[in-house]
Image (tube, rainbow, N blue to C red; front, side, top):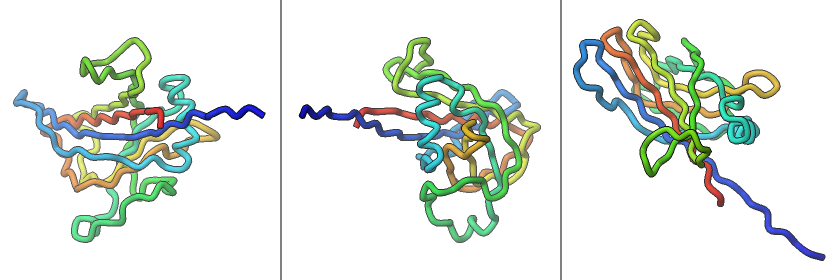
Length: 169
């Protein structure tokens, strides 16, 4: 009997929050980190890879809990199905990313770049959590991040960037 080695993949997520001041002064990095892919998010991965943009569709942002400012919560474990206190959900843009050129690519790559911009007038509140949602048997949480508090104000647009790297393990 012949055996066939099966290919496995690993998915890593990395995110950036950039503040773009409305007065035209230079943008600056607020936070950077890594995310946890939820159990349901793993089921969406094939859709996100196979049909770009149809697996993941919106970015949800929330307040989280004020207690997190003094006692950080445990790291997400992948079983999360919703944000603790969502305040806004926006359609996101998903495109291929070429890490060698540090630019978008029209050709398929192993990196998906998902992003949104919260205009100066949107989500002006204390932000502590976010998640990307996708469509599979209804909306499900693809990933989940708890981060340090960002006091979002009307003085800047907040650009959120998430890159998913799909590697052969």
